[in-house]
Length: 162
Image 1 (cartoon, helix red, strand yellow):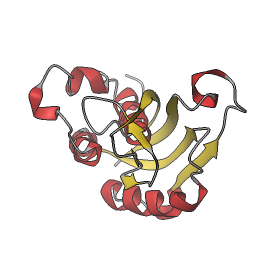
Image 2 (cartoon, rainbow, N blue to C red):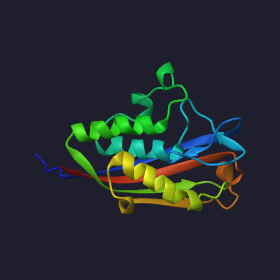
Image 3 (tube, rainbow, N blue to C red):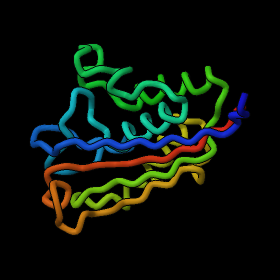
């Protein structure tokens, strides 16, 4: 059997921007005229992180574990979903080495919210603030992101056997 002391996972998410919704990214509410549309709070960053963790564990994706057909997850706080996935990670005997993420949004500007996101995520995932990278990118006014119709995020995680 192969020694699986390290595992890597990638995650991705995208949601449309809509009026009448709160914009929650990285567990932080960001003042903006639109929010992300989804069955839960549609936190693209947390969803990408969840999928990267699940991928590293070779488990089903976020939509399989928390389906949009289940009313229990209607308007769910994505941080709560992340806590459930983190518990699975611990059950499998792993801890997080580091997480590298991107938020891709034309608007709003994310830079001033990144320290708050990192603080929130480091607390939930029981890792050091410096072990989380969150970068903010735009699409230079190209495609649905650049046209301010959606926001996307991606994540890469390395897990280490405890």
